[in-house]
Image (cartoon, rainbow, N blue to C red):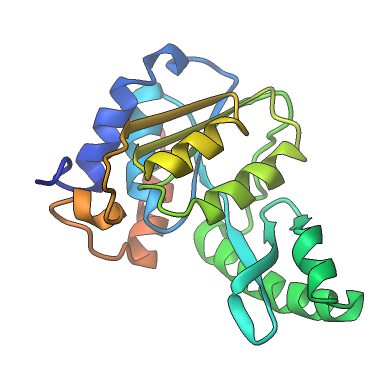
Length: 217
């Protein structure tokens, strides 16, 4: 039996557990696109906090692209997995070539979602990082490692659902992890939603635009 009707409802339920962060001028909500954006939109709206996206691109090993040698993220951050790099003897030149290719895609997505706006300042702020769920947690972990380099005061990960072992591992890496349900067996993120269709780019840009508009008093 599913726990959430859709990402919008999941975001509202998540926001209800984040009320200590409401009406605070140091809070920034960042969504992992694309599926995290409808969830984060509801969180940001409920907390009266700014919303933006945090784009992460995995750096795949040549010929084994599913295996990550690292990741790059918004804000010009690169995180490498030294164990994978050394074990597979991946050269600096190869890493630079992979990074350049993924950087081009990251910049394309940022232009699409954010236009000319720069990533909001993260330093000394409370950042709430939101996605629609955690399966392996690889993308979220990369985002956390990258954001740490931008020195937020407090880093919170908030998701409607996640695999129990993934949530337990990630909890050790952040200041707070909020996961509404972490069922066992997990099956997958989409299993816990009635409606879990892919979030199109048009919806991402629409929600970001609405979030940036002044709300009627």
